[in-house]
Every structure is written in C-alpha cells, then in structure tokens.
Length: 297
Image: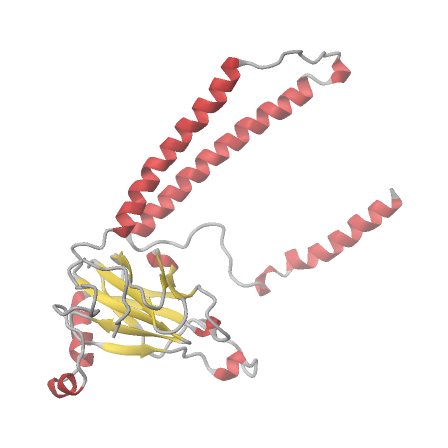
C-alpha cells in the first residue's frame, strides 16, 4: 500500500504542473473548426449527430451493465440464471444496431455524394504539389503562380520569437470569391502530397499522374489556413496553404492585376477554360474529368 501511495503521489506531482501550465501549450480543441462552407457545415452536423447517437448508446449500455452488477450481486444472495440462449435478445441486439447503422448511413452517403459533385462550377483552379511548395493555375482567367512558405528562417531555427501564424504563412495567397462554387483539380509533379484547409472542409490527395477533383463554396470572407497532410519529404511541414476569400468585386480586381498580358500569354502558352488539361484524357472546366493525367502540363 505504501508503495502504491508513492506511485500515485509521483504521478500527481508530474500531472499538476502540466495542468497549471496550460497557457504554454499549443492551441487545441475538442471539436471540428468552425466551418465556412456548406460541405463543412454538413460534415459538422453529421459528426455531432453520430457523436450524440454513440453517447446515448454508451450511457444506456453502461447504465444497464453497472445497475445489473450492483443490484444483482452475489452478496445480496442473487443466483445466476441458467439458460443457453434467448431468441428475443438475439433478434433485438441484431435488429436495433442494424436500424441505427442504416439511420447513420443514409445522411453519410448523401454527404459523400454531395462532396464529389463538382458539376456546375463557377470557376476552376488547378493545384499542383511540389517538393515543397504549391502551384496554382486559374483556368478561367490565366492567373498562375507558386506559393511558398513565408515564415522567417530565423523563427524556424529558434533564433527569434515565433509569429502568430508560424509555418502557416505564404508569399502568395490563393484568392477566391465568396458565394461561388469553385472546382479544384488536384495533382502533383513529384511525390504524393495532400491539399487541406480545415475550415473549408477540403482535403484531397495530390498524386503524380492523376487528377483528383473536389469543390467548395465559401460563404464568409476571411483568411483560412491549411497544410500538406501527406508525408512528402524532409520539408513536408513547410508546405502551408493560405486561402483569402474576398467579395466578387475584390476578386475581379485581383484577377485584373495578376492576369498575364497578351505578350506574356503568347510567350508562355497557358491552359484556358475551354482547352483540354491533358492530352489523352478530356479534362475541362465544365465538370468532366478523367482519372489519369499522364500528360499534365
């Protein structure tokens, strides 16, 4: 007993400083980040619904179990029942979980179908992952640029205090209009990457030789940050994503400022909204996409 007390005391001594020192910990949460897209809101609602169902089941099952253990304990003189099986119990614990699973599967399937519906998009952005940066092509306007980590190297080397958006800031943000359905074509040039922005509920693997599709519609202006989530090499942690959602007027002004001139377009051929993205698979900006992109440009 004395040894057990010493172990408990040592454990509590180690845990108390951790509990008191919570301000020095990185930010953490118990739920999904606040969504700003219809898909994000749907996923959060689905998550909360299934969590509630699981919680009710957990409380119900364990309440019955603990009540049975307490109320029918041997010390009160209860004798165990002797039986081989119960058809009613077997049917009940088969039918009820099946109905619960069907009830969760129907909205989940509808959400998955909606997530994959990239048709009727207002604009298309091609995203290409590189070691270790992103390249963006706005297929409808000709805007094209690389996006690199902008965090000061001194912060990474612990030579100066880290900023608020440490490893989550870039030199060129992805600018998108609010209220528009935006289709993303995601691929990679070297190894597998993954483009992820939590608040947009967008996450898609970028695979060399393949085009993956996903879409979003941002309802609120703001800056939303994400990262590459596929281990892709030594600088995997230095591939942030920053999306700036603006009004349509601000977006049009940004496009006019960054769109290539006629001379630049002639010197560097670019993919336009009506052209094919690959040579052997028709991938256009109207919602159709093949699965292979062996000739991605």
